[in-house]
Length: 136
Length: 382
Image (cartoon, rainbow over all chains, first blue to last red):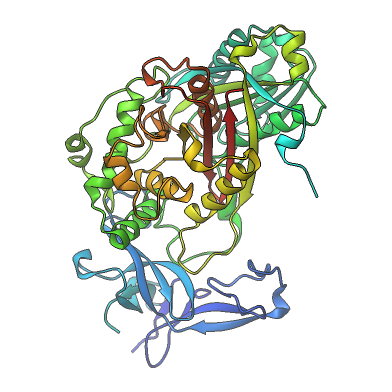
């Protein structure tokens, strides 16, 4: 099978086994954050040499979700579902969900990162983007 | 250790003026701004020549809007400074005006906010950091997420949250400067197509054009120009804060509001319970409930019940967004924070007509801006 290409390679990594990992950071001060940046730590101001790149598991709990009915963008057509997710490493993110109906969702529910195909690149490889869904 | 505004020399609002907030029109920003400034000068019974310095709050017009507008009042050669602080732009322009008078550097200073809808580059998107869903989450979606979390946590219904829009449209219907001046029933509000989550169009603020002006003065200027001392309103606190790192997933808008309002109330020597009128950044209905609680008007999860009891109505315990708030008065960005000051000044002078909160003596104005930042002022009738 031809290899899939991540749409935003700086944000997530495709794993051979298991769900995709999110590319985050842990500062020497203990602060865990996503996405990565090389500017400095928001919690303490440490510079990048004191910040370690880590992979976040892609498992978390829904804090809030909403189905979006109106959205003016060529990139993304409504309706779609977004959520605030607190990852088990203790870092809150916002992501798109891969669900047919938001009625499947509830606050506190566990969700996992997953991939959806959003296009094909010039070499015919699948371009995949990150979504979260209730099943691993 | 620095000083609070109240520890410096006293500062008063002596003049307020507005151009109605409205949908984008053919009018230039110059015409909008001049209307508000001339009304403020007339309100204070002052000539433009008396103004020593001007702060121009605008977020959408671009560079160098100020003198191209102010020169038509007579080019007096006085200082002009532009302020941009996202939704809190007008609030920050007003704050700088207060600080300039309180410091003793000037006696009479103008703060004016003016904007027209215009697509503007958002600098924070140029930080070089992409995110998973930032392209999917515009402000109304952010607040739809907060509404979902609040309702789920506190067992509150979408109907209860939408009651904020019923109240604020009712207040806006009494405000000749409001963009939306039509009363709406709960059914009107809920029967519109959904925007995101439980939010419908009338649960989100209109972003149009307009202008708001406030003139602040020292006691010396009030005496020197014979300004009516019975119509001046003291600014007893001015606080500006920005977001910190909170617990993962905590609502930063409410946390930042909690900190900023608490500092402002402490500086003014007041508690939230003593406030008669409050203007919040209610760009989306859920914000009013979150901020009522953050300000300490009731315990967490209880604001919808306070609203149901009528405690937040004009005539209730504390009139919240008597102007109609951002939801009905509108949110043209640059003017908004100064428009709040105009409303509170009118209320504390007891000149708010059909919107008057009986016996109002103390008020608070609150804005949050993208980033996030928050700016809060406390005003008192002397």
